[in-house]
Amino acid sequence: MLKRELKEEDRITILSGAGISAESGVPTFRGKDGLWKGYDATQLATPQAFAGDPEKVLEWYVWRRNLIGQCKPNPAHFAIAELEEAGRDVVTITQNIDNLHREAGSRNIIELHGNIWKIRCSAGCPAILDVPRDFNPPGDAPRECPTCGKLLRPHIVWFGEMLDPADIRTSEERLSETDVLLIVGTSGVVQPAASLGYIAKSAGAYVVEVNIEATPLSSMADQSLFGAAGEILPRVFEPLLS
Ligand code: OAD
Image (cartoon, rainbow, N blue to C red; front, side):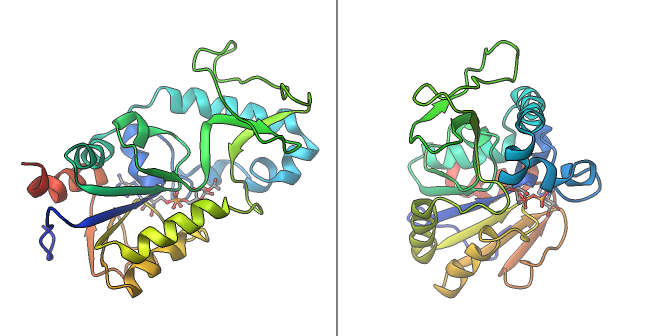
């Protein structure tokens, strides 16, 4: 399936986006049924939106947690996790906040955009707290920072905010020394994640795109595999798992 044979000693990196969770039932952002078709990102996923109407923003995350909470990892997430469990050198850099890579069993994960099951103080207290899965009402989360009493907010990178510099640095280091990069289920339009693949490419990695359609990243990929991630990834990794 791959034009370059995978070797046991290959350092394999996955750069994933919303499309890898589409078969789990998590809505993607762009495209026909994408979240940003029905919702205005500037009203929901910016610090300004939270400052102006925190209740509206928090309610949207309650809705999303309830939706995501019902979703299970699919064969694409499991294929990556199995590779890691089999002792291969695998790192997953994801833009997804849905936690499904971890639920599948992956451990080497960099969550560039945060995690919907975590919250932190909107005033900057350092602690990052877990959202209890059984919180009542379902999908909601504690509202007040235990340290300062200010509002807690989702531990998610909103538009206009910086990614964690440590995550960027670790991702860049990994990409500059990876042998194979699979870019899976991302439209490749949101920076800086969209540019990360070029680091691996210019360092000599074999770059494979997995998507149901062509993206701006297709032209730089050494190979594009068009189809559903849940069907393609188990086949790509099969030679290393059997
Ligand atoms: P997008 O919604 O922009 O893109 C999803 C991609 O997945 C598209 O290229 C689809 O063609 C592809 N796709 C859909 N179903 C697929 C399947 N079954 N198998 C493989 N590919 C499939 O999502 P992202 O690129 O992840 O940021 O979006 C990047 C960021 O934009 C998100 O992390 C989010 C959003 O605004 C924040 O919220 C900060």
